Length: 165
Image 1 (spheres, helix red, strand yellow):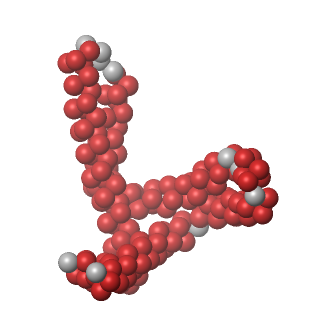
Image 2: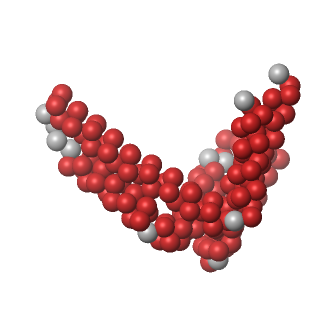
């Protein structure tokens, strides 16, 4: 079974490398469906909380409806979702790098070389994030490449695992 999953992952990686748009559409559909499910689940949780405590959280209701609406927009406006994905990916780079810079202080106590390496990598991450905002096409191609690379690496792991058992 591991071998078949590995082959399937390799095939998916080839599709991602050959047709980046397909992998971007799949990512947007995944986020859309996840948002809709999260929104419905949030409505369910809000109802359960109200039943047990009598507390009616309007904020929870607004967020649940917003999740459902965002999911529906992403699902029925794939082009909007793909554009948003490019900017979300770029902002993720920036926010992750800034967060890591804030957490850098204790690293110096553990290892000075690691501290400087982390500082340089995170500053580069901020620059990469801003460059991805400036050129969202590069951001989209990077996402598509990472999807293909993920499936390629995991496909190889599954295939190797199949022969090592």
